Length: 112
Image (cartoon, rainbow, N blue to C red):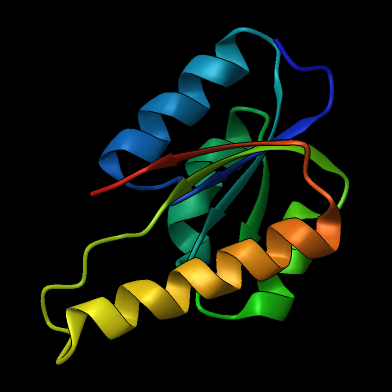
């Protein structure tokens, strides 16, 4: 288990929540990131540091990843997007810029 902070994006979704809770149960330091601050409360109650942020905002992603050793990345599906590929590319660019700015050593990306 990494000793530094692990950032989990999409932490309130099906996969992100399960991952966050599993890592917390193993004593990991987690920063849970999602859009809806209210949905993050349950994870904060379990010991996660939480951050409400828009994944398409590179500056916000830089703040989310600051001080982290590792990150779990997931581009949430957006079936309402007029151009799905453009949406995915925008999120991917923001995530990569944030990872680079924060110099995160390890990243795992799950495609959805």
